[in-house]
Image 1 (cartoon, helix red, strand yellow):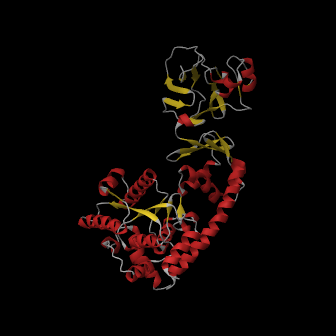
Image 2 (cartoon, rainbow, N blue to C red):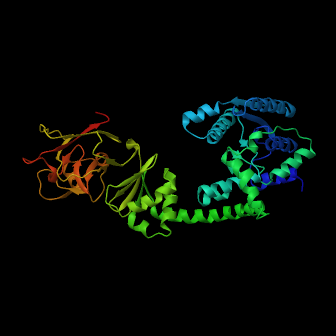
Image 3 (cartoon, rainbow, N blue to C red):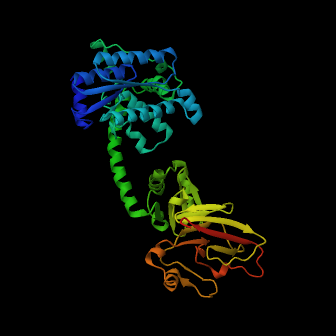
Length: 444
């Protein structure tokens, strides 16, 4: 079967796009992307060309840009071109040049696609790229997800050349007298992918001559295994995770019974920007005291009694918020909490200000919405009272009840915010240090 028929068959088998779809082809000018253009033309697809000049190879980068412009004229299709000062952007964002170029490329492609009515972005990734990606992911330690390689389709990005290796594309170019440009940096090992391409894989082939075919076969098998893996993970998630607003609540005792714990826990927390290396630290939280937590770029995992709570770092989105001793101000759903500590003070009787004896108060405090079963010792009383009963006494409406927050320390409620402190933490004649909490409503 010739490569054109394989190309058309692969697109059909993988359901990549329809004959009438408008395609935006990512074209560098190298043999892979130029063959992609030729195959798309021969197959009768409606396409345009997009090219990025990353200004990384001096005059060669400008040469490629001009070549792609001429290629678009040859095929009589629209061309979109852009230049980036990639080195400067990488330095400012503190990322590698390789990562920066990739991010810039796909962001710009999507901008062109969405604003000009194209259905898909089409890239020229081929089987050799797939092999390199799997090996890189294996050595990085990305888990089973990284071993399925490059997917034929990801949202609006499709890759219809994954069935073919580099040699097949080069042979097609020779047979059809296709002109392309050569990137000399592909022969250098400055970038991670080039090292795998030029050094590692050729060295392995000396021992295992069929390594490339073996890896491609493994990619297929691992992709199928990943589907089974994800099915099992989703079953565990359904049993363990309880969504409450913007938070996820996980019962500790139930979590401790699952096996393999580390794998299942990682699959849960990775969705909230926690790394594989943090998994063991989260496992340690399961046996820790209430109030301990671990943080990612966007979320916290908090141990609260018999629960793990995954909560946004942005406190105005969270319903379980930790207050450290050094915090002075906390923004949350219904207002702002101001925190001060004093050794000298004047008594304030406002219901929106809680003055508490610091003795016996342990940080971090937990600011959260009240829940059924909560109780405290209302100021002036020696007996505990459930909050649900307290709200009835206060004649709170259903809406008012839904917006009540409490602050607790070491599982004891200090303050029903804006209403009443706990008698156990009131100021006395022997008080030396005071914790003052002031609540300011958003509408106040």
